[in-house]
Amino acid sequence: MSGHSKWATIKHKKGAADKARGKLFAKLARQIEVAARAGGGDPDMNPTLRSAVAKAKGSQMTNDAIDRAIKRGTGDAGGQSYEAITYEGYAPCGVALMIEVLTDNRNRTGADIRNIFTKSGGSMAEPGAVSWQFARRGIVIVDGSADEETVFDLALEAGADDIVGEAGAWKVTCVPSATPAVSESISAGGLSIISVESPLVSDNLVSLDTVEDAKSVLRIIDALEDNDDVQAVY
Image (tube, rainbow, N blue to C red):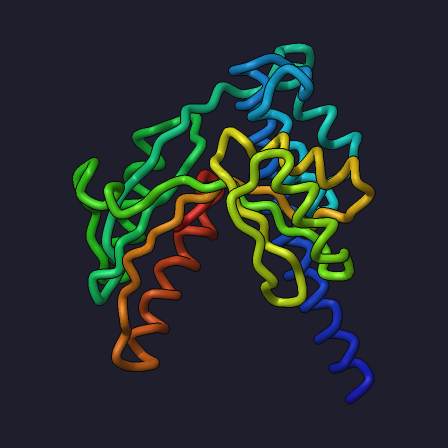
């Protein structure tokens, strides 16, 4: 009985992990489709697509899946038309949130996002009410086994602003437009890149008084991230 229970637990955990991985890949594919539709299917000529592909590869998405997403985006293999929308709002305790979505139905997605805020004790905000607190930055995470001086030289030569050690890796920051050049310079130098992103970052930090406050904020973030149309929550 205990052996059966252990196997059931393993299957449950694996199933949950596979589901999360499938959802991540679906979101990454959607980003690639939108980038390819907007700027063409050649990553060398489309910086947005280049960044989306690098992010997908960093998440272990296969080349075949990436190629299929590009073809859907360029119209060579069907595909859906998506609209990029950014929602603003407040989690419990006044924590500002920015939510980026890609949707084929803005009415459905808008209602879903509003419902999540309402159920989680947060509130939607008007455009501009929250966004002024955020700025977009390019971030390239490099494997921590790389030599600091090598990372420094390759990154700065390509236009990076700063390099810091963080959680066993090197975090390279730059303006968003320099992200493709910085990541390519690091890769060309033979270093392993863990991820490439251009997230929204806020310098306005909010202190939460209790563990329950923190949990309430995490709950709304988890609920938003679980929505299929949501690409990122900041």
